[in-house]
Structures are given as structure tokens and as C-alpha cells.
Image (cartoon, rainbow, N blue to C red; front, side):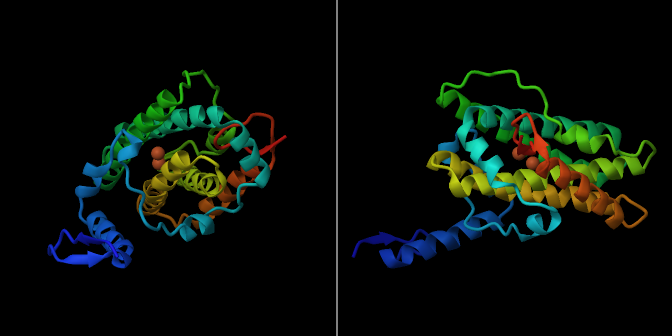
Length: 252
Ligand SMILES: [Fe+2]
Ligand SMILES: [Fe+2]
């Protein structure tokens, strides 16, 4: 049996304890603010995948699951999905930056979205790195119907407009998370699968942050609005779509 040194107390531990030890160290590391940020890197080979991310809040929030047809189409068109993923990360940061400029009165919104922008731009760098290592040249891809399909229902007066944008943000983040998880499960590309699993932790937090902001900044209960966008989003995800994108519907 091989022996290695436990860094904490410098006592030898046997290999059967290693998995548990790694898990504990990983959890401890992640519990300390700041350390996790230091470990995040634009180079995906340096990333550590969180041991377990509970996605049940994401699945409960969304009204529908991604279809097998979308997963199959995505796997058969990975360069396009990777390109659109890069676009999505950049847009996520841009949308959050617009909110930061528009709603300066909320300390909570400023802090949560500043962190989110930092993380989305890191994801953008990481996806650029993935494109580069695979020799994928940047290609222009038009936006799909997904975000527009929800934003057209945004109310036009404040604070309702702000609340709707935050709810839509929650759906986009939750759906991203669900799609990364569904791709990671079946993709025959361990490097990409590992990267998609790495993204689950931050994207599920982004969903929760957007939803919590929407509720805390609204005078009314937002359940009815959430239920409304849940239906709109489900329809966009499950109905036939002629374009394949990261957030597209069932391939037509
Ligand atoms: Fe992201
Ligand atoms: Fe995100």
C-alpha cells in the first residue's frame, strides 16, 4: 500500500484514505472565501472541479428538461456550441454590467453582479482558451431566439422592468446550468465534460443570486411573474427551433 503525507499534520496516510482526504481538503478550501478565486484560472488544466453541486433547485425552478434531440445535435456540432458558449459568457457579463449602471441604488445588486461579471469574464477567457487549443477560429454567430423571446415580455415601467430582467437572468443562468450538466453526462470528451462540471457551481449560484435580487428588490411577491416566465422559457426550450444554439429549442 502506498503512503503519502497528509499536508495538514504531516502524518503518513494510506492510499485508501486519499479520496476522502482530497474531498475534505477540497471542501475546506472551497469554504474559505478568496482561496477559491485564486484557484480559478483562465487555463482550464489548472481548474479543480467541485466534488458535488446540488442541482435540484435548478431542476425545480425550470419547467422542462432539455430534450435528447438537442443534446444529440449539440454533441454533433460541438464547434458551434463552443462558439455560442463564448458569446453567452460575454453577453452574460455585458447584461450584468448594464444592470450595474442602471440600478446603482442597490448595494446588494452592485456586489452580486460585480462578482458575477468577474466570473463570466473568466469563463469567457477559459472558453477562448478552449477554442484556441482546438484550433477553432472565431466565427460570427447571430443570437438565437431565446433571450429575445423572454425579453419581449419585459414590462416597460420601473421597478417592474428591473424585476423582470432579473427573473429572466435567473432563467438564463438556470438553463445554462441544466445544459452544462446534460452535456457533461454524455459528452465523449473528458476535458470538456470536466470543464462543464466545473461551471455548475458558479452558474447555479448566478441563478440563485438573480432570483434573490428579483425578490428582494420587488415590493410584490414575484411568484406569479416567475411562473409566467417559466412557461415562456419552457416553450422556447421545447418547441421546434431551426437554429442550433446553446439555448435553442428542440432541433426542427
Ligand atoms: Fe458563465
Ligand atoms: Fe453565469
